[in-house]
Structures are given as structure tokens and as C-alpha cells.
Amino acid sequence: MLDLKFIRAHPDRVAAAARAKGVPLEPEVILALDARRRELLVQTETLRNQRNVASEDIARRKREGQDAAAAIREMQRVAARIKAQEEELAGVERRLEELLVQVPNLPHPEVPLGEDESSNQVVRHWGTPPQFPFAPQAHWDLGTRLGILDFERAGKVTGARFTFYRGAGALLERALINFMVDLHVTEHGCTEIFPPFLANTASLFGTGQLPKLREEMFRVEGNDYFLIPTAEVPVTNLHRDEILRGEDLPLYYAAYSACFRAEAGAAGRDTRGLIRQHQFNKVELVKFVRPENSYRELESLVADAAAVLERLELPYRVVLLCTGDLSFASAKTYDLEVYLPSYQGYKEISSCSNFEDFQARRANIRFRPAGGGKAEHVHTLNGSGLAVGRTVAAILENHQQADGSVRIPAALRPYMRGMERIAPPC
RNA sequence: GGAGGGAUGACGGAGCGGUUGAACGUGCCCGACUCGAAAUCGGGUAGGCGGGCAAAAACCCGUCUCGUGGGUUCAAAUCCCACUCCCUCCGCCA
Image (cartoon, rainbow, N blue to C red):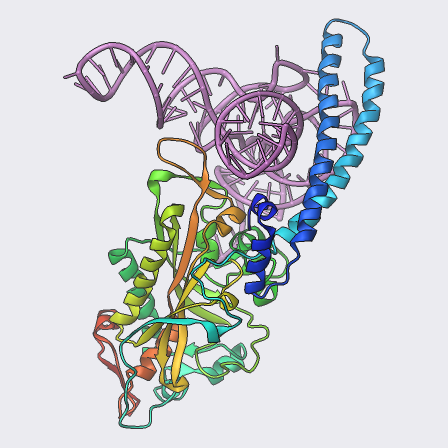
């Protein structure tokens, strides 16, 4: 959420930013409602003041044993007017709030202007895509032949876009989760969090999934719970409505969670394999930082996520998203894209964003500077470190061998009971 | 699921219709004492919104906020209703 005062002062910039993100927006409507609200507010407050002054007078008279009946009768009329004013004001505020929460965050000035991913900028590459002296298999074929992924039975038991992991496949998934969390905790200074996998509407509103992405989520019937689409939601909301101590910043968290996405509107995209599932595992990094450090923190967040790919010997590239590809809440986002032979190209495996104070304002997360002073909104960042299912796909495809086996990268072996390869059944 | 108790500022904790935006304590900040620190003493210390106000800050004024939402009343932290969350006991349960 943007500061209403900022919108008031720079409606043109807000409109331009929204346009760049592809969000239709009429700041004039917001400004008109805002003006009306202030007008009503002044009237209402004047009446309230009249009431408060009179109440004190009534209290004094009663204390002194004087008659207050006339004043009370007068105030009954004022009270009725206040009530009517307050109702009108509440209506205007409701409409204003409704529009305000739909205003997207402003892109950072360095973000390239563009409508879609074709305007994204490749920032750097790491590693080289493997050259196979044989016809490489896609991970869905490879995994099925190895007996470690079972898409068919998952379709029977649950439905499309679900998977059973089996044997070494299940172990690989679990090993990756532990490897990633350990790396972030022991080398990147994160505190490990294991969050709830359901969150309420206030939390989803705080991180910006609501109101816009309601259709993207699974809702639990009969209560106020949604399955989380990412651990970003519970972990960022950990500090909702809190004032943090300035000396405690920055806070770094690493959280494993399952993630659930309805993938409405993605019909026909990535229908095979692990790439686009309704349920997938992810290790998420979340940072709460001082505003002046947030862009430096974004760079180190990208480095932390990239470290996982490097240890797993997976070639990747870093992409700076253009305005049109930037999410609603983000000011600047780098995607990490891993090379996938089956796509003959790079596929997103991590998304690292700086939200500046956009989420902090929605979720009311502030800090008090050391030495006292006014509480300020923190800046929040998060990034995948990494999406686990896509990492499994990348390992299977990039480390596959001519005989149909898959080499386990050395860094992962301690988490796989020393296993060096996953071999096909005899 | 049944019975009861509770939710107040950064934190602990009073208040239970009318100078209570809120005693007291802790923490934090400023000052005094000290070579310096501790201890002690003095003072200060909520947030949102709006107006003065013109770009920001400071300041002044008003208003709202004592879990959330409604109600009663001239007036609500205080009374009533609903909801949420927490705690204790019983039952059930991984």
C-alpha cells in the first residue's frame, strides 16, 4: 500500500507507475474521495468537539447540583447529527480504502520499462548448459523410468498437477529441503522458521496476495483460512502489527513450507512434470531491514539464493524483471533461472524482491530507531532459496547420465546417506 | 465438545459511567552526580487521522484508538450483544 499523502502529492507518478505495471488506475477518483473524506472529517470532528465540550459542562453541572436537562436535550440532537455524519464518512472511507489497496507499488527507477518478459534484462550467467553425447530425457520421463516420480497415481489419488515422490525421489526432495535450510542458517545468518501452512485473510492482505490474487489460492471452507501460496505470507506476517527494536535489524529468516497454488488461468502451461504443481515445497528467505539498506540487502539475497544453485552445480542466469513483469507489491525483482534441457532454455527457480515499505505499511510493521524517535516502516524482502520441485527437475535433467542414471552433486550426498547416483531399477 | 477466567501503552500491571490517553513499575531517552561507569536523584517517553499549512520538519489545536465489530447513553476502557484469540479444568484426540 502506498501512503495516501504520497498519492496526493504525486498522482502523476503513481498513475505512471501503475501504467508501467499494466494496472489500470485513476488517481483522480482516489483524490476526489480523499478530498470528500477530509471535508466530512472536519465537519464530523467539529460536531464531536461540540459534544465533548458539552459533556464536560454537563458533568460539571451535575457535580454542582445544577440542572442539566436543557443541555442534555440539546446534545441528543447533536448526537443524532454526529451519527449521520459518521455513517457517511465511514462509507467514503470504505470506498477509498477499497481503491487504495489496489494501487500497486512503485517500480524502482532502475527497473527497465517494458510490457512483458521480453523486456527483462539478463544480468549475468553462471555455469554452462550441459552438452549431452546422447539424447537427454525430460525429468518427467527420467523420473518415471527411475521409479522415483509417479504422476499417474497422483492423478488418481488427487488430480492433475500433483505428484508422488518415491524411494530415492522422496529422499532427494527431503535432502534438498534440509540442505537448503542448513546452508541459509549456517552460512547466511538466517533463523529457521517452520510456519503454519494456513494463513488468515489479514495476513494475505498484509503481504499483498489479497485482494488481487484471491483466485490463485485454495480456500478452506467454513473458516477464514487459505492454504499459503508461499512461506512469505506467514513469515512476513510474523511481525505484523509490531514495532521492532532498531538494534535487532536486520532480521533474516529461512522457512521451509509446502506451497499451494490454484494455477487458475494456467491451463495448458507446463502440464507435464514438476514445474507447475498445485502443491510444491519451497525454502523461502525473508528479510526485515532498515530502509537505507534494502537495495544492498536485495543483492545479498540474490547471492544467497544463487549459492544453492552453485553448490548443486546447476547452470543459471540472473534476470532483472521489467516493470510489466514485476509483481503487484514489488519495487524491484531479480529472478534466478535454472537451465532445463527439456525446455532448451532457462526456467524461473527463484524470485527475489524488495517490497520497500509496501508490505510493511499494509501489515503495519515498524521499527523504532536505536536511541528512540518515531517508529518507521521497515523494508521487507523475500526470495526463494529455492523452489524444491523445480530443483529436483533441474538435478535430474542436468546431471543425467548416458545409462539413464542421475549423478547426485557432492554437496547433497551427506543429506542422501552418501548416495552418489540414482540408478534405474535392474 | 462442556464449564469458568481473561485480552489495557515497547513490556508488566491498575482502573470497571463523567479532568483516565489512561495510576504505578520496568524499559528507553535527556539532564545532574562521577575521571568514567554502576547506583542514586530530577525530567521526558503511544499511535492513527485531520486542521493551522503553503514542500518538509518542528510546533499548536482537534479528533479517534484500552482484542474486533455493533448497541445503550448527553457522555463508555468502564454497561449490554456478537465475534476472534489466550488461559484453567473436564471430555475427546495425533
